[in-house]
Length: 197
Length: 195
Image 1 (spheres, one colour):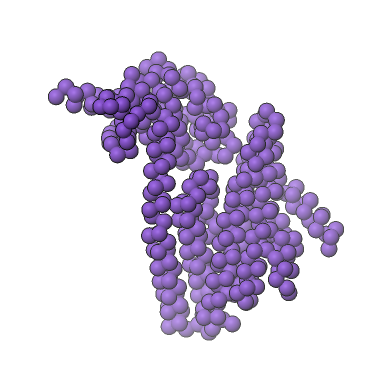
Image 2 (cartoon, one colour):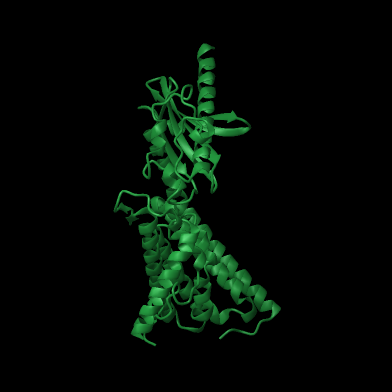
């Protein structure tokens, strides 16, 4: 069975094992790199398509980077012909179990079209109700204009019905939507400036 | 012991969850629904079989004092390979289980089987042991997940049974311990009757 250990054979064994493992991992990484990227882009694209107004361009190739409160956010312009009809904004906030990433679609007039959750680590069965497939929580934002709809949970004096027993998650979700709204306003400002030049 | 006996031993007599009580962290963490438990079980089974076979074939060459770090490197490599493959080819499943996949490295069942069985047995026997323990782990996690899902969200495998939210506590950590405790009693009662 096991050999007697000496410094030489211990060092040699560990070196060989780590070398072989890293070579193997490198190989698999190279093999899966392409498909993983494809899967990620497909996910972003389907999220954009599900939240933004109808478009005929390729939003994921025209990303606008927007800085807001010292952080960088991605905005995907949805265009019909040459006209921008809306934006899909990728936004995030800290929830109960970690970062919640969402994609918020705005029509150009500033109305929330739809929201889709990209990733989160909230408690399954509780906080994960922010996913559209699990509950109607996100539906209440649809068609709302954040100028008139106070995006704060009712407990804190806003208009949002929080998820039962997941107030922290609901608050974070509202924060993320609010951030997206601010980023959206910056986007519109930017394009208006460009249009005026 | 025949290979078939090796497999069945992993399911009943040495069931990793209900008898050996190993790997409690993924057991309690992932079983919020039946499908999550099953996915975790299958992923662990893959790692178990691969690492058992790899370790039994190299164990003769490893000096005694560095065997644990060597085993861990082998296991971690397989887990990372699994993670990359899932991310690339089953993004949907990766989304639900992704968080828990790295936890397989620290699952004591995998290291436990490497140390207690694979390092002293042949490659095929170790593979059979991996299959048996893997099936035992998968079944236990699925049952535990199903019980918690049923009580906690009134659904099973994602299908809503009655229009109710269920008892929240069973989705949370305390419910995991309570459900596991009762299942332990039932399983051991059943096991002592057949043996």
